[in-house]
Length: 116
Image (cartoon, rainbow, N blue to C red; front, side, top):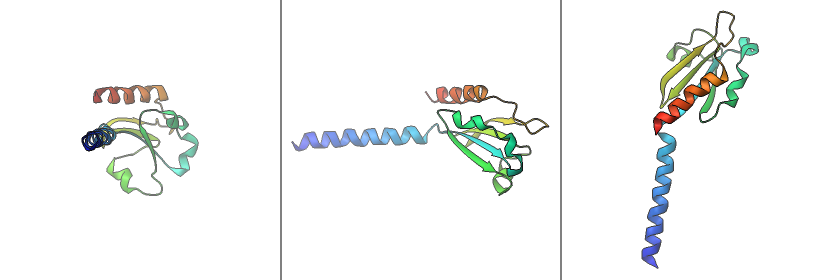
C-alpha cells in the first residue's frame, strides 16, 4: 500500500508543478491605459478578449507606470508577454482607438501559439 501512495503523491506533485509552470510561463497581459477625463473613449471591448489577463491603468491617478511604458496618448493598449511589451495600439488624434478587438485577439492568439 505504501509504494502506491508514494507513486500517487509523485504524480500529484508533478501535475501541480506542471500547472504552476504553465501559468507562470507565457503569461499574456493586455493593459488598457486611459484617463478618467477620456472615459467616453474607453475601449469597452477589451473585456471580451480571451486567453489573456486584462488590466486597466488610469494615468490621471498615477504617472509612474505611464512614464515607465512611455504612454503619451490615451487610450493605449499594450500587449505584454512575460512582462515584455510585444504590441502597442494607440488612439488617433481624436483620442479614439483605431485597433479593433479582432485585431488584438489575433495578436494574442499568435503569442499563445508561440508558447507551444
